[in-house]
Image (cartoon, rainbow, N blue to C red; front, side, top):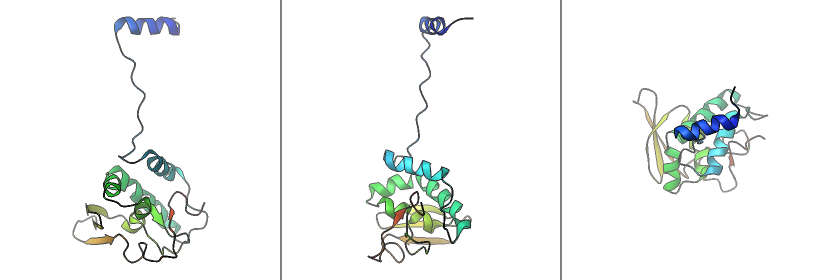
Length: 151
């Protein structure tokens, strides 16, 4: 049986480059945000949650926004992380970021002011307005990020 030195010498002699370490997908987002989303996927639902059945859907929608690169596009257009992944500090859904609002719909269009989403059939469309009702118009409501909510 060869030791590691012999294996390394054989690999070097054959000119086979070692396979690179797999890179972690950041979805085109800043590292801190991509890391927070990956952590969100692993977190259990918040301790006190009025609508606990909805939580996994919110997490799935947040990850879809990231994986489909809508979050990166939105940030480039001036959206904030709170616009995308924020929620009101209480479980009353008085502030909803895009991930909370989506409710299983898929984004089909996004610009600097709004996102248009369609249901599974594609027939029904809805509009999420940045700064619109329940999306940051209450100056007293400071949203928290989904990965911090209820922790």
